[in-house]
Length: 464
Image (cartoon, rainbow, N blue to C red; front, side):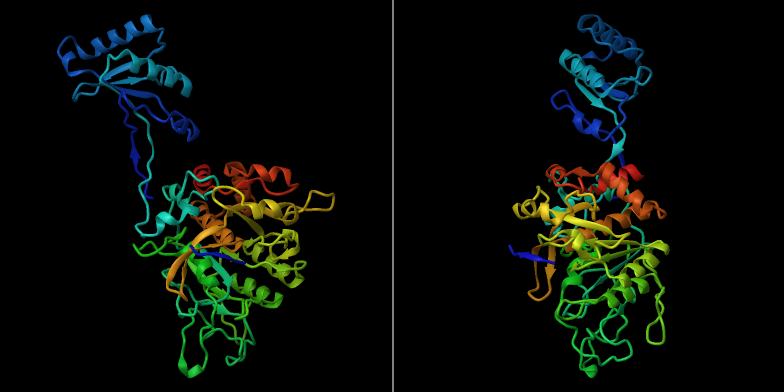
């Protein structure tokens, strides 16, 4: 699933401007920030000439007559410090363009030392101190075309430990521990025979995660770091070390379904999905004390959705879990890969943060159903697929690409949404992505391909 390429708390604030630097009107309007007050500062030489309020009202009246400035029934208040007065425009509602016109005419009059738009808005108060966070453009670069824009979403919520995310993947990395992630809950290893802990497919010991290596068992932890990289997109801790994950508070439930050769079976995946929601256990399989709210499966296997997997998904959906899967990285239709083609799964395709790569553009026609009478849209949304990961084998960080990472980005954003609204449904989430996401323009020519890339900030703003 991977192509390798080496290579905040809420505060209220005011926008402060002077006569030489005006506010960003486009941003204020796009974020629907209410503007009804301007702070006017008289030059110091004007002090003591007349009663402050009367004097300012006289200045504004002269501007109304001379410049055709429409102030309506604006009220003036002496703020009681310095030489500042508050112009209240609320009694005469105006559009952003009208308020901008008032601001600019007051600025051009040169009668005031400064003019400040007094707007109440959210300020980015939280940013992880992890040294490589600034390189995680998939979540922190709001200027990129298709970033997931998580950095501003953290102003609304940073997660909730009551939200449990199960990651069905390859188990622990070779080191025996997940790198720089929060301590996982007790998961389970579904590869091999459940009643034989000496099965050669067993990834580690004991079966119940977090797996730890014990030389007495003659079992090594294996060779795959795929789960470490996938889970890290959600769970990298914010601890001034390395990278930062999307939801630092959600609970991490690791479940192994992939063997040392990178392969899985319908039965292992079906069992794992049911166990994730505590609907499958027995003599050799313990109950899951932490049923998952979200299940991430960064796998794409060629073929129709196996009925055993579909049945397990149906059970998980009835239990209230959301299932997120990657669409795959080849030029074959997403509808030909399971579990993404199973009913009830939120399937995620990937795009670079600055647009669609040549490879993606070339494969769009084959990667998605072409809109024929019998086709159905398999992919619900886009998310970035170029991410920073830790390389445990080399003890370094690098960029990896693949929809394996698009999927956990969506899972992490959904967990933030569930922290705000625990009862949000999959369809409500998809509808919010369609409402608030970023249009993928090229996609509109590719039949039933989804048109929106997820934007965490806009989504949580609409949900909040």
